[in-house]
Length: 207
Image: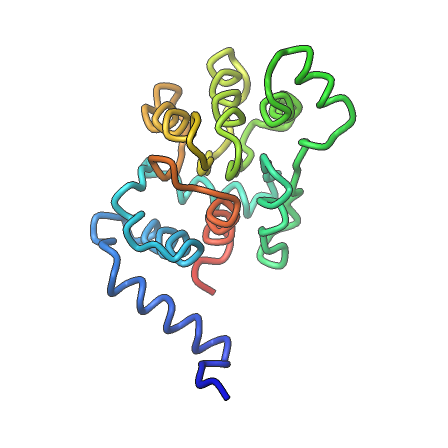
């Protein structure tokens, strides 16, 4: 027999207690600190708190958009799958990666499917929530579109992961030259679990 905690409520409570004890979250505004706790909980790495960049109104803008029923755009099916729908306000969760024609668009544009899929967000991008947890090219393409005059989302939750372009795409977002509200984790670390956790944190806090 193994001796381990089985009660879900106790597991969550102990997890968040551990995060608060081991991570430096004092620099974050009160509303963002709960989001940061969720992000750390999703990856088990308290040290990521040091690399989180954000705009002061990112949380309030994201929560307002969620409550209003704005769509949530995800760059990967894993991000979309990790979003807890019962905490939403009827928001559509949209991932266009596997839509008809995206692969052809990517080939014709000499880019990735992830980047080509972002073009299909534009008609509903205004005031939306964007969660990117996989492809740096998706974040770069989003920034290009906004720079070219596409509508601005309410908040960009930018957590692409990897060794090629991930750190650079998040640095571009963090420069905030486009006036976009955002939360991001600088460097190579990211992933679908962190991106979906950021949406869940905005929707339900630590519940």
